[in-house]
Image 1 (cartoon, rainbow, N blue to C red):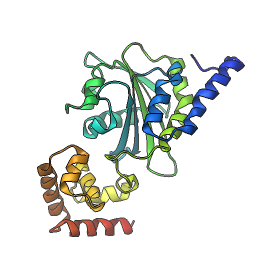
Image 2 (spheres, rainbow, N blue to C red; image 1 turned 135 degrees about the vertical axis):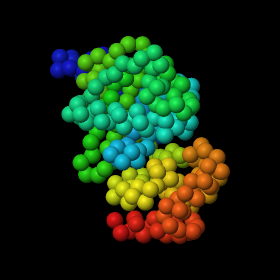
Image 3 (spheres, rainbow, N blue to C red; image 1 turned 90 degrees about the vertical axis):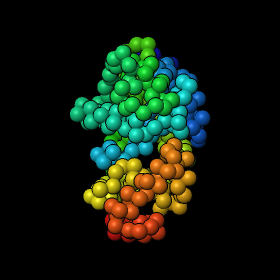
Length: 265
């Protein structure tokens, strides 16, 4: 079904009824059911990736909504898909903040999502077509990007227009859903470009900054490893590098310095 000024009153009424269901969304399951329902009439897709944060620094979060096996937010690897999402955001910005579509090669979109293995990467291997659009937040550095993927046919011009129409409702729906356990409970800290830049100036990598935030929130090494799906040993090694780069001796000193940086911004 297309969206155009020529829609009949009945078709417009149907569209309004479908998109206004977003106001009742309260959970990730609600989002899943809604996007797999009549929204498919306007924007048929197999995978939806929603990303938000500071795309300039690379400090972004993401959600995955899909019925495909393994394509889940809590089993995906943000390090694997961040380069693809940053590339999409740059393309979207270069297009004048207009939706655009892409066609993948033989390997689908998996090659764009790095070499790390995860359920999402395997699902993207089967995806041949994507349409991308975003929402620029002029009041903060937390922009949003949405990418819809499918494997059966190109996204048409009318579907790109549909993306423009339905995206505000998708964005509204996800903003009403609580963050998942693996997502930062305070993305404003890590997404703040000033704080992020200060930490980067000390030589901290994106992963080290992420771990430092979890330490500041009181998480232990085993808990951080579970959240980020890395080993406790890897977390410990990251912590040693954080101590060295921040010129501190222990977790308490690192947290104290981090909180001082936050309070000064």
